Amino acid sequence: MILADTGPIWLIGCGNMGGAMLRRWIAAGLDPARVTVITRSGTGAPEGVRSLTAIPDEPVPDTVMLALKPQQIDAAQALLAPLGGRIRLLVSILAGVDHATLAERFAAETIVRAMPNLPVAIGKGVTTLYTAGGDAAAVMEVEALASLLGHYEWIADERHFDAVTALAGCGPGFVFRFADALATAGAALGLPADQAARLAIATLEGSAIMAAAAEESPAVLADRVASPGGSTRAGLNVLDRDDALVGLLTDTLAASAARNAEMAAAARR
Image (tube, rainbow, N blue to C red; front, side):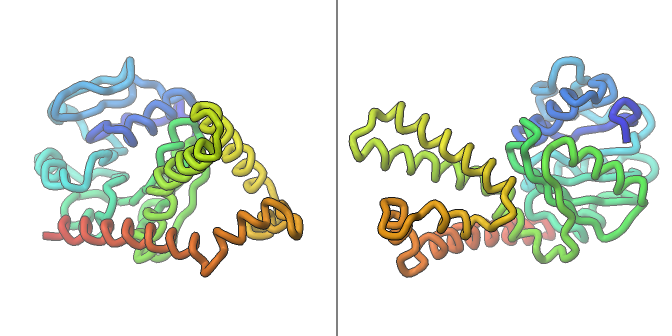
């Protein structure tokens, strides 16, 4: 699919994630005039994008995206309820709101759940996709849009959605926290704080690029960096002791996944 051929799109909500996705698509060639953003304030849309506070009195476009917080699902349902006819493609980035709930609340021929993460803003994000089935052309359209945001993957079992949301959707926040902790630890050893921060971020960037290009797993790469009896091995021994790092991250993802499940339960009420 060529973005220049994309039909009209309505974006219900335009917060941090929705705005990041939209700006990336526009940078990749999507005509802003083809997009209508509908928010309570009527503001926040990129330049050239029509911004409204209510559904316009015009035919429903082929594609409608729900790009707001899961707690706002009732408002989105009320907003779209008066529409005549079914939406051809509904894309939802509402964390925790499952496919069945979306199908119950919104009349759409094809529903796709999407969970992007914040690096979609620079075309280096991860977007996880799920659908219970629908029009093949609509699915291809979603893939074309997702491909411009970075890496994307479909999951076959919706029960995994909370886990992939915790891993990839929430993951940038955890990586940013790790980068900050790495810099703070460097400063604790005597480095100037600003220099420690620069070194930590540059180290993460280079390591991530190397891991993405490598055929070996990150575990193998870590062992290759660590010479027997060397300084890297001494540090890894601390992280590896009693699987401390794995345990910490497992607890971290479990907390995020549990919160996703709570939001899904709230949306079904």
